[in-house]
Structure formats: C-alpha cells, structure tokens
Image (cartoon, rainbow, N blue to C red; front, side):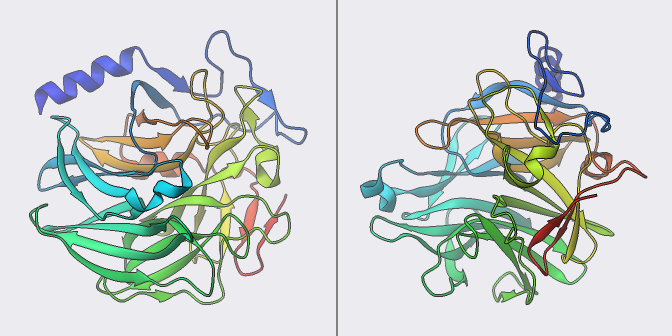
Length: 343
C-alpha cells in the first residue's frame, strides 16, 4: 500500500493539470458563446501514462484489490462478435478474469462480496443489442442474465450503475430518440430492472450528443458525467485547450433525474491536451486512499484510442461538488422535455 501511494505521488509531480489556465505552450480556444468570466475548474491532474487496450472501463476496489474492468472490441465490423470483457489487476498489471465473448461497452459495480459487470451484446450484422449482467464472488465462476432489453430495433451501448436510497440506478445509452442519448432504470436487487418513465437525457431540441454516461449518487444529488460535442449544444459555452478538439466530457447534477444543472466552470470536465487526439470521453471514476481517479478514453473515436487517468487530491464528494460553485448561473437540462435551458 505504501509503495502504491509513493508511485502515485511521483506520477503526480510530472503531470499536466486541468485548471483554468492552459498548459505551457497551449492557448485556450473558446466557442462563439463561451463564457469568458466563468469560474475555474477543480484541479484535476492528468497523470503521465495510459492503458493501450480498450476504451470503455470502470475502476473498482474488490476485496481489497484495485481492478480495472475493461473490454476488447475491434474497429472492424466483421469482428464485433469477437469482443470480450476482462478484468485487470492495477497493481500487478495481470489479467485476472475474462468473460462475456461477444460483449462490450462494459461497466461494473461492487456489491459487498460480489463483482457485478454489465456488458452489451455486439454482433457483426446488427451492431449492438441488449444489456446483460454478469456477477461473481471469486472472479472465476460467472453467472449471466438479461438486464435491459432494447425497445424495437434500437441499439444499446454504454451503461453505468450506482446505489441510492431506493436501491440501484442505471444509466444506459441508446441511439434513439437521438444518437446519442441515455435513459434510466431502477432495481432493488441488480437482477430485475424497470425503466424510469417519462425521463430521458436526449437533446431533442438541438440533436447534440448526450453520450457514454457514468452515474453517481452523493446525496442529495445524482451526478452524471457524459460526452458532449464541442460545436453543438452546451459545448459552445465552454473554453478549450486545442482548436482540433471535438468531443469532451461534461458533468451535470440533479435531485430528481428530471431537471439537471450543468457545471458552469470555464472548461468542460475533461478536455484533450496534445497527444490525446480529438476526444476525452467514456469517463468513469472511483475513490482510493483519499484521492479520486477519473479514467477516460482518448483518440479519434474511429481508428485509435487509449485509456488515461486524471487524479483529484481529495474524496469524490469534494470533487463532484467543486464543479458547482454557489451563485453561478448554469445551463440546465430538462429531461422530461428533452432540451437544454440556457441562462
């Protein structure tokens, strides 16, 4: 444990910070409606390493082990059914479990002595289909069952699950009614899921991306971290470090899942730096030894991508709350009517 903490401290010393000011040699680039007077971002520091495999991922602590749950998925259409899910020990670097052939878009949740993994069916002919749950107490024997069945001919993608005072809440991504958007489902036992009626995080008004959600509950708020476009919808209101950036990660919060408030900070939560391509999305996060780590995907969303990590020197609750300074006007999203509300 002491060695791990020392390694993380060493990495942070030579990292690049995501702050209000761009790294040396880079200049901030603003959209046409960007708020130049917006408050600075929390000090989320990008660490100088990457995981070259996969894109979707969830970091967890299971029985004292720090694990990264990931997926392998080819960019070739005729190799989608070869996709699979795997679990990597982040201390030793070893793969400790592989499961779910034909599944990708992975997420995970530790529930006591059980690791739950959610994956979406991949096919060569029909793209993606339903979401399944896998679970194990020993990382060797896995059980599997249907969690979310798609509606009609829609395609489901990323998922994320958290606990709240009513049980469990899932955010799951779809290509309908907008590509991309997401909905919510609830469960008491992680086995039977019921969609939340009348609510969808889909930008019907501007048709902008609401992609790859990661959901957390820190009372009294739900927080969702999700992908947006730079040049459409709320993406126009942020400043950026690079002119070529296209896809970034935003953060929003809500008390009831119906009305959401977007962070009014100067930059989006995750914004590419040199070497990360045009993309910083597919983010997930966990808390470990008093710090919060955000794992996210880089690349061009087509031919290459890596997983990178950013660190916040404090607990997750503190990080999430820091994106919402008091008395600052913010964009809202009306999930009952599918539109952003601009101040």
